[in-house]
Length: 200
Image 1: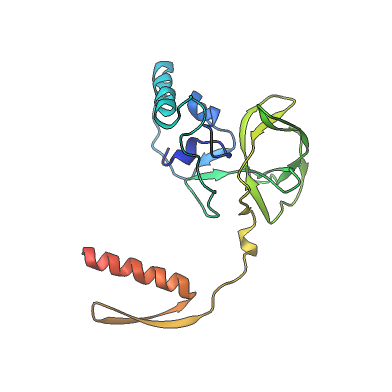
Image 2: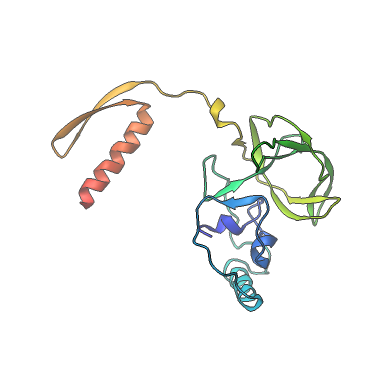
C-alpha cells in the first residue's frame, strides 16, 4: 500500500472490503513488484483493519475527508473494471489471449451498490469510462461500489497528439541545450532540472 486510495473503494468515501479483511483484490493489482513475504495472521489483520478505521473514519466506514477525483494517469495500482455512461461494466483482460468483456447491469442497491451479471460478452471498451471497484462476488452476481463521475482514458493510444515540436533553448548553470517537443513537457523538465541542480 502506497496511498490511501489503494485501500479505498472507487466511490472515494469508504474502504474496500478486500483491503480491510486482508484479502487480495481480484481486479486491482499493484503496479510495483513487492518483495515476497509471509502473510500476516488473523490478529495482525484485525489490528490493521482497526488502525485504518480509527485513523481515517469516525464511524468505521466513511472517511473523514472523501478522496478527490481519480487521476487520468498510471497510479500505484492497475485497475481492470470500469463503467460507461449507460452503467455497463467493462472488465479488462488479465491473461494473454483474453479480451475485454461487457457485463449488463442487473440493478442498483442503495446499501450494496451496482449489481452486475458475472457472465460477460467480448467487446471493445469505450474510449473513456469511470473506475469502479469490486466489493464482493458470487457465482451469480458481481457487486461494485459506484464511482466519481470523472472519466479516465481506457484507450490512451487514441489520445490526441499534442506535440507541437517547438524548439526551446534552455540555460542551466551556464550550459545551453536545445529541447524539442510539447512546450508544457519541456517547461516541466526544465523545472525539475533546476530543482535538481540547486540540490546538488
